[in-house]
Length: 269
Image (cartoon, rainbow, N blue to C red):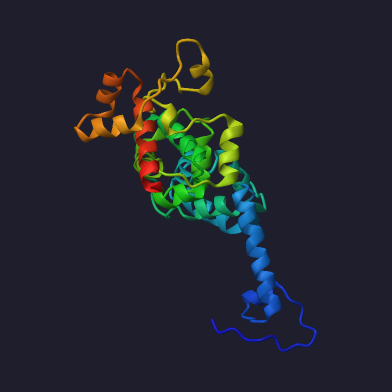
């Protein structure tokens, strides 16, 4: 699109004018301020509303193709109550929810998916939040909508389809190896009392309890002091984390922490 300078002497700077092609510095500044405010809102979990009419029309077409409200909710990650509200004439909808609904292809509904326990997926998303990884970043790599990930991370659903669980697991393997340090995400994780990757011995086991600071302070549960150099040496001999832990008389997670600390020291040298 070719942008042109506004020709009117009484020109009022605005983002709307900028979007129509104006290259006035004042309109560019108005657009810049709008985008800054929008990004700040998104980082805080605040989302703007849009006209629900396109989503309503799309939902009607899905229903005409024999979709149920439950299937629409599962495919989009949007709650059934929100879907029903739009179908009942609610005029506005959050932009991310509208995008999730509009992203469902028109056609026959898919067969009911295989489902698995959601505990592992919930813990993985929360652990990544402890490292500062946002749901937007996770969604970009998994292909799962931010809204759906937001529903999963609450832990209110006991099951999840296996395909989504596999996507979360695959991305978790990569993202759990480094920090992102988004302050709003880390603050939420801290306030919610979520646990990081190293707190879990078996993250998929619903009966597994996280290793917490409180637990380590109880008598007899103090974490042994392990020399990171010793861990690196044993790992170089081909020993696994479990084998190193057995030899040093510590927990496997302690070995993983020591190895990570050694890597950080080597990188800083």
